[in-house]
Amino acid sequence: MRPRIPSVPRIASLPPVALAGGALTVGVGGLYLAGLLLCGGEIESGTTVRGVDIGGLTHEEATRKLEQHLVAAGPRKLTVKVGDREGSVDPRQAGLAFDIGETLDRAASTDADPVSVIGGLFRSGGEIEPVVRVDEGKARAALGKLAKTLDQKVRDGAVSFTDGRVEQTTPRAGYALNVDAAIGALRTPFLRGAADSVTVLPARETKPRVTAEEVRRAVREFAQPAMSAPVTLTAAGKRLTLTPTVLDEYLTMRPDDAGRLTPELDSKALRAAPAVTGALNGLPTTPRNARLGLKGDKAVVTADARLGVEVTDKALGKAVLPLLTKPEGAARTGEVETRQIQPEVTRENAARLGLTEKMSSFTVNFEPAAYRTTNVGRAVELINGSVVMPDETWSFNQTVGERTEANGFVDGIMIYDDQYAKAPGGGVSAVATTVFNAMFFAGVKPVEYGAHSFYIERYPEGREATVAWGSLDLRFTNDSGKAVYIQAESTDTSVTVTFLGTKKYDDITSVKGPRTDVQQPETTVSTAERCVPQTPLEGFDVTVDRVFHDDGREVRREPFRTHYTPRNEITCEETPSTRQP
Image (cartoon, rainbow, N blue to C red; front, side, top):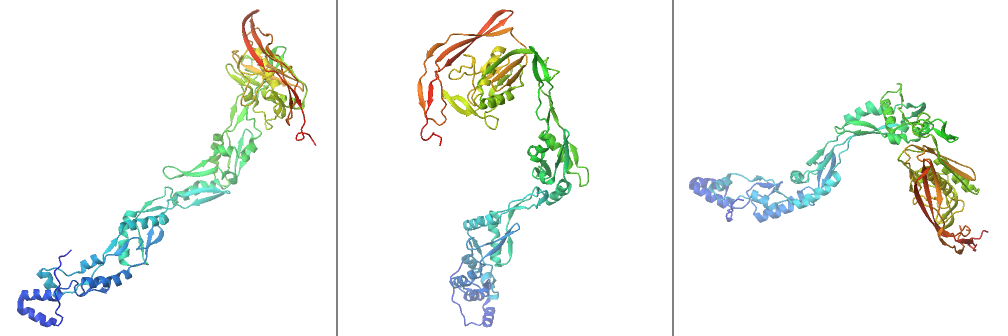
């Protein structure tokens, strides 16, 4: 800031010509004195700010005049642009204003040196550019708010498929307002004062990875041919046709690291699509072992094995994708590679696996009942043909599955909380007991088993088993050294399970001990809606020994200990709520 000198009163009556003539006679000193007298005011004559004349005014006078005229001349809004989006900034909210004090400091003629004072006699002030003041805090807040509406996320070009049609997404650059740099950029348009002009604010640009040119290439080379016509496939003699409206749901184009769009087919989802599964339904997807039976005590093959044929997700995708780039009118047909799944037991390998003779067989008889016939028959169907390789463990629950209506089972009578009750799968314990005894006399190793809570007369004491989904299983490990084949069959009143394989022992027998710790039942009356009458039977403990014989002599014994609770007598009585109308 220039140093100021005290104001000197003007001599308004002295003509310029006379002054000039006088100055020639008084010399330089006279000119200096005249300059002080005439230019002692703070603002040089002829000085203007944005057309506002402040020449010859004092600092205070000029301040008042500029406050009245300059502030009103400022723009009320600034039109700005970020990328290709326009918006506006309110200068007052952005902290933009004219600094009148600094502006007048520029305009003030206050130098006391002779050259400046004498020079003031021969010049006028001219136009002064106003000084702009920016409140950075307000500007940053206003620009931050503006960025939320004008910033633009980058958008990659894309190709998609809908209803058998190709759809394109145009790429778009992304812009993020550079707030720090934009603060300074607001000074110029505010100073210029042209509200209708557009100021491009500095922004960080993000270019799309997938360009418009790449979108055009992907459409031309892949997308349009892919949707131009159906493709036809053949798998193990089965024919299936996939139309564009089927394929579009599973087909996408995704950018790689270089931004090139490449096709992707969701082969797993396509394999499960009705158009595919329906066409391939007739394929034998799982192999079937050779069926074995007995001729005397010798095992024989009664039905040949069957290969399984699998169409994998990968093979389906490998067959479909190359056909999609073939143009309309070209042969869009191909073969799907299938995988053959070999059965474990065939006519050729049965003897090598050791499936040569009967190891054991056991039959359980029961009273006929519709639910029992259904449930026993379904369990037998699922068990029959099971093959247990050496050292493998077989599971009743895993083989039969949950006893539900969807799995082919119906409600029946079973033991629940130490009494008979109706529940899905009732009667299946007859199959479990039969499998247990076949396992017992085959000599293989029990892993998990459990008897009924109370004794049921049709089963052998201490040699019976029950199962419950999720809590009790019947499992054994094949430790015979050879494969074991389980044959199961049933009638309306019986179930028979036979183990085929190679005997490890000459003979296996059962020796039952006496009942011990005998307990008497109680008598109760039940009014439960699903009550089942129950006859009384004592509870007891019993031990059964599995005796192994080889070369005509006993080689070892294995005890099976069972505890039975008393079977209480239950009489069912109706109440008004349970009585049938």
